[in-house]
Length: 220
Image (cartoon, rainbow, N blue to C red):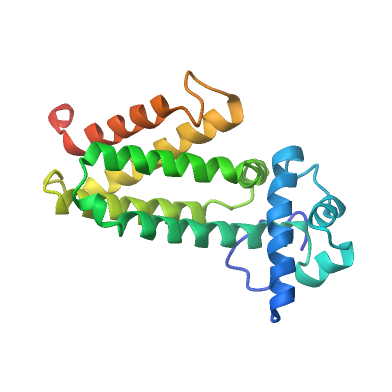
């Protein structure tokens, strides 16, 4: 892949298929190792040899599965997005979402989101570094925001607390982006004032989300 060419997840050639189980397991080890290396060194300072060594693989094994480091990141992004979709579905399909107090549901949502994001900090560091160099790496993240916003709006309407607002889904997407941004800021820049794993942060963000999406006095 040309270093000057913008990355795009739509490119079908960014990864090589892993047909056998052993090959898929090695691919998964490489993805996990790469995320950790990106967390420590960032995308541009990380080397393929660093990733291969962390995964217990040879550099040749890396290149048998990925064209280059940029292609590796796109594979990591696809993997992260797939896990995010699974997590969102699992959370909102839980029957407790329809019976527990809505605020408690939102606190759990924020807590789970923070824990998941903290576990893939290297992915977010690489994402921002690539974005700052002009690579269009955000579309998969935007799709996750849309999916999560749709599930939140559906939940609020089923609970009878949603506003009669044609723009509610857009408001929910905006709120989710702000929530993610606050968690990322806490991870990358330190507590302000709450750390990512602080229950007070989870409650504050949950309260903000609930008030923003269920009270319309400020919009009149």
